[in-house]
Image 1 (cartoon, rainbow, N blue to C red):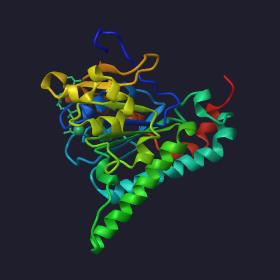
Image 2 (cartoon, protein in one colour):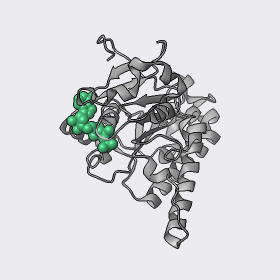
Image 3 (cartoon, rainbow, N blue to C red):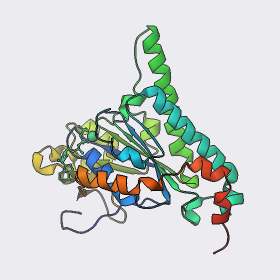
Length: 279
Ligand SMILES: Nc1ncnc2c1ncn2[C@@H]1O[C@H](COP(=O)(O)OP(=O)(O)OP(=O)(O)O)[C@@H](O)[C@H]1O
Ligand SMILES: [Mg+2]
């Protein structure tokens, strides 16, 4: 909702990347939860849920995920490599199976679901590790590989129905590589402490919008309030994001857990072919 109580929507179709940034405790995870709850009942959506915080936030939501991981960088890299495998397989199959080059022309379906890859506290997996000891080198190589995979998914995933949502406390170039951040079409910022951090997420135009500047949102009254560029509206818009209590989100995940499918399996078993038949 905007400040006048009017609904503000975020386009999902044809989007490959979303960045959600803001200081700790201002509502990033809750916002992602709300989006999860909207999409979870749909069989045409599958999730990859990755939580860099490593806490219990996503425990119950994992039941509705095709792939899930906490702060285990190797497992995260492996999951993203699998999503890339799906992307490549879909790129090869899309014309034969869906009859189009861009899945958004016909829309996702149960057998060709939109794959939403949520990476919360994304900087955890993308940060360089400095140091010359073997462990630092290993972690640094993993972070680079993970960053390459995320970047490729954001750059090429859109047409085959893969979407990456990154949440982070820090969106400056040292935390999220700019190549990744700047390719995301949607950017949402909760409260920020510095102008530099706000500009990193929303672009330099935000400096000319003092009323919608995320620095102004540093107050408990603005938990759940974010600044964004909304479709069809000039400049920046302040929005209050929907809030879904954990118990509701958990109940939705449990009730929809039976909808989990492996999108790669759907592709290889030929189920997708039946789906592409003329309607
Ligand atoms: N839209 C909202 N409306 C009202 N309260 C909210 C809203 N979003 C979040 N909150 C409150 O703020 C708390 C913190 O939100 P959340 O965990 O989403 O923050 P976060 O940005 O993910 O923080 P962190 O960076 O520490 O993970 C929630 O537990 C909830 O009580
Ligand atoms: Mg969080």
